[in-house]
Amino acid sequence: MNYRRFGKTEKNISVITLGGMRYLHGWEDPRDDIPQDTLNQMVECTSQAFKRGINHIETAYGYKKSEHAYGIVLNDILKIPRDNYFLMTKGYPQTADETKQRVEEQLKALKTDYFDFYAWHGINNDEKFQVACKSGGPVETLLKLKEEGIIKHVGFSTHAPVDVILKSINTDLFEFINLHYYYFFQRNLAAIAQAEVKDMGVFIISPNDKGGQLFNAPDKLKKITSPLTPIQWNAKFCLRLPSVHTLSFGMTEISHFDEMEGIFPAKYPLSLEEQKIYLELDKQILNDPYAAYEGYELSNDPSGINIPEVLRLRRLWKCYDMLDFGRYRYNMMHVNDSWVPGAFATKENIKKIDLTRAPKEIPIKDLLLEAHEAFYKHK
Image (cartoon, rainbow, N blue to C red; front, side, top):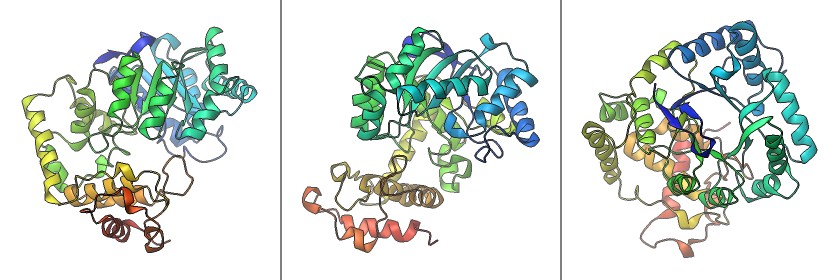
């Protein structure tokens, strides 16, 4: 295992984090009723994590059973001394009073008297930013709990556009950030650079799932990244930046830990072999005449379509055969959803697009309709 200093928190954490989002029955209610097969799975994975040098556990109130299950596994079954690992959880309370109540609930669920890291979960747009960071609001309350020693370090997680992420970083309220950044999603590089300026810890969310469902990678991608697996390549790509400190790996079985071993040593810069993979992946963008166009200037379009994201998914399909991933992400989109925002690129919505900001040589409407017809799954 490799370890990195998690920014100004001064904690040396493992570059791989054991995340708590994907265990059996994890999203079922009630949150405090933990089935035996869930406990068995968590015991196996948590034991493996510690054996292989992982010292960072990540969970969230929003993961339903996860906090209660970790509380049982870490304290009652494995009986791991609390100072042997760092614990991160998250929540999205809306007020000061709700923040105090929620943190107290989470402390009881996780059977601990403090959190090493607590992130406000989901500063995903400007509205969420205003709720979290308002005077007398939840983040201010979290900082007061830090003064009391209940929380050691306060951060935030985000699925926001990069301008909102930068605004959040520049408040100087936070010591760490959880965000998306992978080979197939590089838009947040500026946010990582600014986090480095502020000496913040940087945690990469879900590189194997949100990063491209790399556990179900197409043969084309497997061939390009060989002798690494796509998961191993993506981890090395993220960790090539010294300002990236840890990745959540979504491990739920022993084989995931075995694959994890193949990313070490995770160092910077990339080796010559890894740089060749990088160049070959980049070269695939030349396979489609419009794949390089990002469409950033068409963000917040009156059509409601998340044009940059639809074009990104189209690129992954056309250049890397990642059709299944495109369908997976596209069908998660919803209007006014802060996690995966965007209307579908139907013919009706496409008619509403404001093309005055778009390059005339790019057939935006045709590209979006092509993507919609390839990705959309009729209910």
